[in-house]
Amino acid sequence: MEKMNLRKAYGETLLELGRENSQVVALEADLGKSTMSYLFKEAYPDRYFEMGIAEQNMASTAAGLALAGKIPFYSTFAVFAAGRAYDQIRCSIAIPKANVKICGSSCGLSDFGDGKTHQSIEDGNIIKAIPNMIVLNPVDAVETRKMVKTIAAYQGPAYIRINRNDLPVYTSSAGEYTIGAIYPVRYGKDAVIFATGTMVWKSVEAAKRLAAEGISVQVVNVSTLKPLLKAEILKYAAGKKAVLAAEEATVIGGLGHGIAALLFGEIHVPFAQIAINDEFGRSAHSYEELLEKYGLSSPCIYSKVKKILDP
Image (cartoon, rainbow, N blue to C red; front, side, top):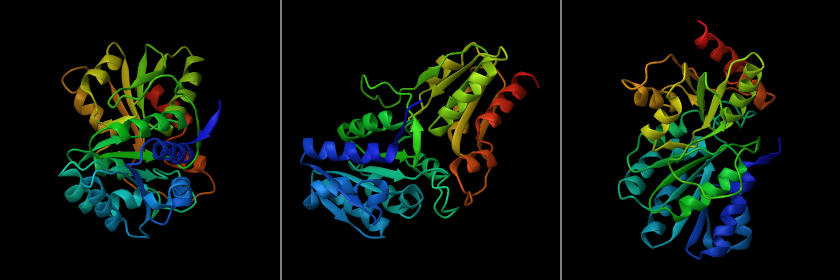
């Protein structure tokens, strides 16, 4: 399948928004060439604010710009976006519902070479816990473009997780992104995998292998982590023999826990989670090496589905 880079899609879409709307501004924490916000800087230097390695100040400044009627997008690595500036996001952005858009770049294990200090397995879970925040996790570059445009038009705070690497494209270029919508990328009747981000790709690979053995597995792209709509989850879980949730994040407080809570008392089928088991990442030679290490590869998903359907 065609692969495209999500960071590049983010930067190019931010540039496009800046061209269309003079109220769009960008803030950066000394990582513009990595997050790709530097594309905006080159075109609109007077609307670009380099805050240095000071995410707390960046969050507060973005809140002030929002109060002045601007549409601020601020970007940094996901581990710093959610961790360093938590109090500022909570008090200056979420409580007043400031119109600030946060890009947590190089999320999950995608920054494979820099180890546990730079790999963010908990950022989405942290931000989800803050009232008034929406949290998005695109599957590919095409969905990233749509999401960025959608949150620019959305009135209120939003957080988007951006993978560092090139990922296969599953999203059609037609239509717009709708916050809260989830959709199948592969159909099946025996089990359903609710997957997000990279795990969509890995789940599809596993589903293809399972299909060769006569096991039909549906894969649903859950790219809105919050709000997670109960009606959407129940719609795809209905009639299945098993339900799984797959995410490149810590198992605690993640997508799996959210789906389990929605299914409780509604649909009685075996349920399993594919996630990182309460531990930090580590440096590796490749992204694939880390996904295998933490049980997030397609063979790991294949084995999990087999086990839950035939314990």
